[in-house]
Length: 287
Ligand SMILES: [Zn+2]
Image (cartoon, rainbow, N blue to C red; front, side, top):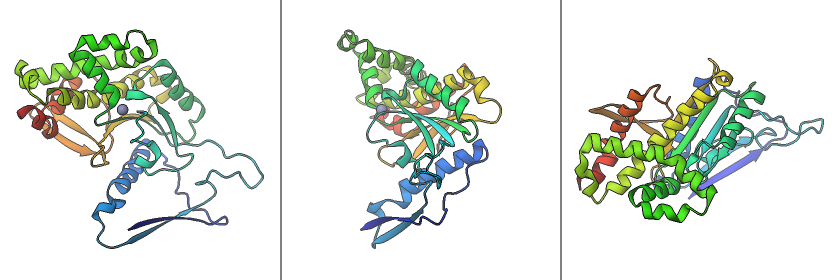
């Protein structure tokens, strides 16, 4: 049994200090995800565990002593997918008022999403240190885009719906980039493999998160400035860890946590090949 207790002490203050820079903000998120994925894993428990979290008024978003609403002061802005299995604050082990979250299917970067992040950078700049794009494995939106790509007849299903098409269309760039990466790594015969569709999905998920982060960094470079960073990661639905595959052709490696996206087209080519030749994608294409 795993028991989680939230203990509220109205006189105490337990909220840790706000991250003072991008590196600290990234570390806070990575440690929060590690605790979520590993520390709170009921399947690994041999004996009952009781974990007590002490929370204060800030954690619970309670009004201030003079009756004012709490000030909005997130330390990171996160663009993630709407998928119900990827609750942003929980995945990163954060609470109220810690994160400015934008969620949309496929974590695609429409103008409203970009505008929301722009707003956060402009108005919450005192505390905001980091912008994160969070993709996830087996993403339904990316799957829809891959299926439309593999079978153009399926794209017709989206034709009458401009909003749905807007999501699928935005995902076609990473899907095409994933196809190119797989072909460069595995030759044209890869398409014959039973696991090709899933390999395309998982490669496109990683490239989509990286491309989106790079686009935010370019579009909002003035607001981001030298002090803040834009990073990305992919949440694995099985391991519950956030991580990415990085590297150069022939030398890919999986690293947990959040990383900076490539800065040029060569970097994206290398990233695509690294993902396409990573063990999980390789397993799909070898069988
Ligand atoms: Zn998704």
